[in-house]
Length: 97
Image (cartoon, rainbow, N blue to C red; front, side, top):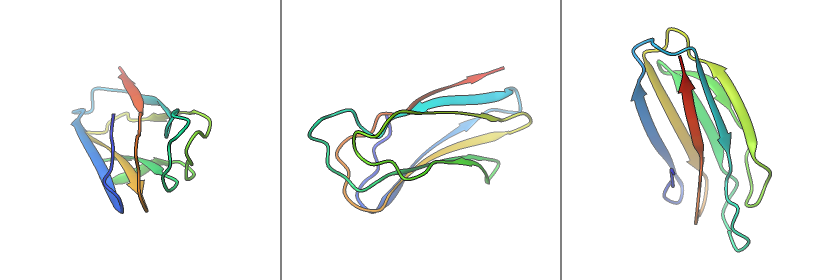
């Protein structure tokens, strides 16, 4: 789970050492009925290069499945951009060799 502070970006970085082929995730901004926050944008970067970016996701929007090649990527960075207030965020993902 990644939860950014209001008006900020939450970041998680992983050293892949070029050992993986694909990063896949299902992104969900919130499944809480009482969630209230500004739409969130999710980004996946490989070696400081943007590999994927979501459209802004509002509370209770549908899950977004994504998959991107990370072949040769040494450092994977996941970002959640929050342009306002946020209460809850639940992404999950995996890498496959």
